[in-house]
Image 1: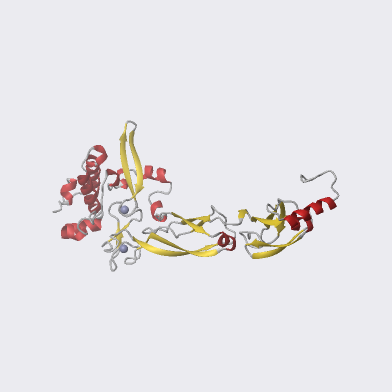
Image 2: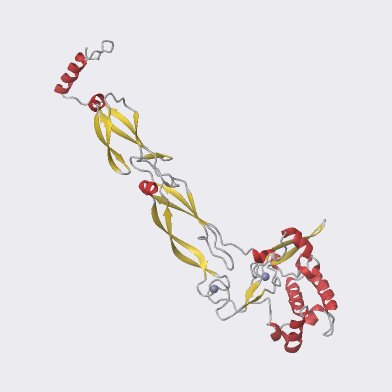
Length: 365
Ligand SMILES: [Zn+2]
Ligand SMILES: [Zn+2]
């Protein structure tokens, strides 16, 4: 595609003064602005012409060498301008700078000092009950946008430099003008070409095509702290998706703790039931209680009632911030025998008769 002469585009002579060029640009930019019904291609052309002619150095090189002297078509390079929102716009020379500042506080340079950030990523893992109690390390296998290995995220083909973005003239921002009954409303947005960095590569990276990132299968080692509970979320800063010229987003890992066949949990307490027979309940004894630390010998005092709770200190869940552990609460369930042989029945009758419980008579009498 042959490029039109820049002076011709702006409708000025080759000897036009800087002021004449500026005025011609403003007129042409307003005329061709897509939001005023203008032709987008024409609008880009106008901006491109002005980009060169407003700069004495570029203008001189253009006069001498033509388009080749100023890098050919500055807005080329495969970028998709898609919609009118992405048009290039030299706001500074349309007197929009102040409005721009009032929208963003920091002004156009704010975009450069606050580069974009990669997307946050959320994932979910399941851990065993005991692993949640004692902590563990898991491998998270994720396919995430990572820094392009070819250009190292610069977006430039190795051996090529970055140059000032022609779309935003290095400001990182473009201004979009909407015409309303109340007048024109200017809205600034991140430059779609340089993504706010103000720089574009001389030659776009041939691997990521200028994105600066590539999807990559990654294994991230995640340390699950001892004491983590179901529903907890761990944030790994800057382990989310990469973005060209900015920090990675964060990775949020939602923890699901698988139910245990025997234990339940309430905060730092572990709860379980243990069955004992009525003889042990009556005369006392010792039983082995299952805990996360293995079996623990526990004393059953004589006269233990069913549904009594006993506390095993130090066998619960460690506190997340280190140090002590909670308790394991054992609920004792006394089993009443359901099948008694003749001898057992006789012994129990004898037992009852020997008892001094006059008011409570058994059904067999
Ligand atoms: Zn690349
Ligand atoms: Zn830009």
